[in-house]
Length: 620
Image (cartoon, rainbow, N blue to C red; front, side):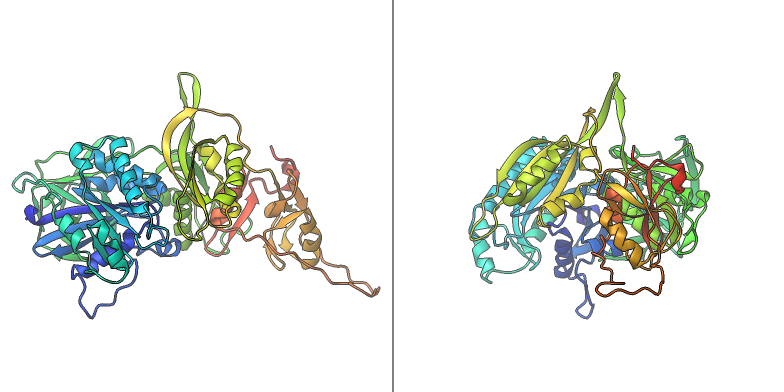
């Protein structure tokens, strides 16, 4: 069976078209019947993935090319979800490196490609979006291939890996070619508009090495859940054959890190057919499937025969930042969602760390607060939104970077940040990141044709602390036309204080419902986050102060009723409008002495100490 198997993954940066390409691979391979309805970006099945337009978790699918079964894994393209990438590399033998014809290889491409090269995978280079106006008629496609080759060499690829096949594609229209000179013909509507050249290269990927007669072994790379079957272990059968009803051992670790084993019986075996899971009787070495029967599973566990041994556990790069999670202690607790106890919050976070090896949970000195360690603001934001949609009420604090001490020297994580933006805004952006201890490494002007706006690519070396909270500022500075991506560079000596926020907070000093009359005077002191008729409580942040100090204000003061009347504007007040604070904006904005209150209905900001007479007005 293994000779008729191919296991591949798709490597690409955010928005380079990998999910769209997988859609057309499945359709053109005949995975779906003519009467079956299919949606765009089928692999992005999670609601947040569809809303954000990104892949968050790795997905599996399968299609057939003649008698060859191809298992394909769609990997996330954002660095914050690198843990998803690292753990699925053991399941595949080849990769399609998808690169935008205009943008070229970007940081996350580099990160995932490095993992693929270390695993000795065969890589197919696919230059996507060759139909982009900037690429048509220019040398960009050829330059993109050269940059990809330079990247292979830089990452230490072998001579064999550097002899990669090249495919030129338009995934959106479902065609590709291995002849660069044929691209103009395809753009004019000619040529055989299929993905057959890519299919041929996929079949050329080596079949997985396997020993079907050895003791069965499977490394758990992911965990799925079924209401009927319980937890399902997803991974590739490294050796042997597993059958329904067979007894296996789960090799895991305890919370203290001690190895442990437990016997269980396989109740169901599942494989992929297209994107659906189908029940089968046995799984052989080299194939990817799911095993049900064990009541408890963790990513990194090994499932083996009764005489088998454990495989090496999955290791991912260490977290670089942490965020504090707490039970909801505001006066509104329990009104808009499920007010959970600390035990329930800890268990929910612990379940998340078991399903995502890139996250870690640590207890704090306070019984109802916990540190969650991860890789970035987006990763935290996705989890917070997920828990919010599950009905939980809780609070989170500002993300903080994890420091280290080596030989008595304080160290902090650095990142290599790549910015693609219109040249007109490069001065403001450069100044913004240099103020945050960033060092400009390169300034490249893009070669564009026609009347396209001149764009530049800036590369910075910057502390992770310098990036935190700048996403909205960067989008504002570039009028929404800028792209940003980064990759970890390891730890460097601490660079000193970096200013986070130069403004204070407008804080409600009493409980009640806001009035237009009161807000009209408060807005003169800064920018409001809420409008009239909103329930507030003492310590709740209702706006951003124009100065660098916090200000307690009365937002619920009513207009006194008298029998005195004047002509003109008596009784007329005008509010300038409010600044809408999304969850991501709140994470970027808050300071260390503030909380974000998260409920299924609302996202609010508050001070950690609610009572005005218990905290200082000036920020520390």
